[in-house]
Image 1: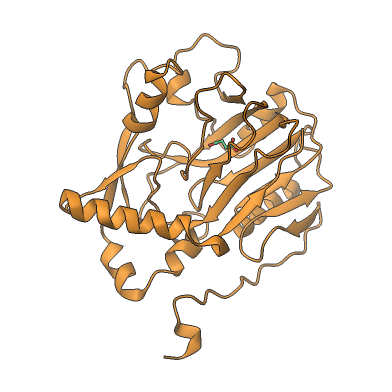
Image 2: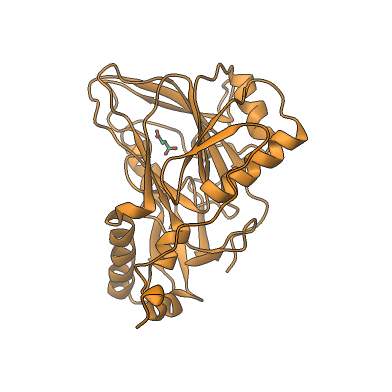
Length: 297
Ligand code: SIN
């Protein structure tokens, strides 16, 4: 077999690194970039927005440091990219900023949001296109990093027969698992109309912006593959979750400093928040942007 056809060889992308509105420094050759020289509290020009969209398509995870943002500015920034999502656990809540999901962990927290590989709220029929997490306070002891994984590369690393097997399959993404666990320990609030969103999505999805195929199952929400027996489905999902979990070259790691905002593509990536700082605190909030259509193959 010619080396270039070996499934382990995914070539480094040849993205244009030239931007006129900011400087961009990559975190790894495949995923993640730090953007310098852009003030997120000021309204974006059309050119700035265009370049941030291009950087997000190419690098999937964009890190902006030293940003002074009020809640309103955080929301305005998200709205520049689409309609804001209200998390199922905040729907109907009488709070000042229902579009901002608190991401707070301290010595009393029974769990930290996102401590496990997942993409955000894939149990929605129309899942989130992107998320922006703004961390105000990092743990005094250090730590609290977030891992991100590239789902294009996760797909590309699969063998031809495995890709062909997965194409055409759909899987169920159910909010009952993660949200019931949280409700059971007294956190969050069930969505009043629909207790837990639940949706069926293709296992291999084509990204609407890039046209590239990506692997679209995650251990946070995906419960089973439709049409397979329970044990077949469990084995295939475990194989795919292990593939994501045990392939470091598809990952980048974001180390937060106070007032850092990270903007990620929620279709082409998964993330895992690392809770290694107990009993210290980490404080922030997440704004998420709705997609405009159901994910399709
Ligand atoms: C999340 O899952 O959105 C939270 C990620 C984090 O806290 O780093």
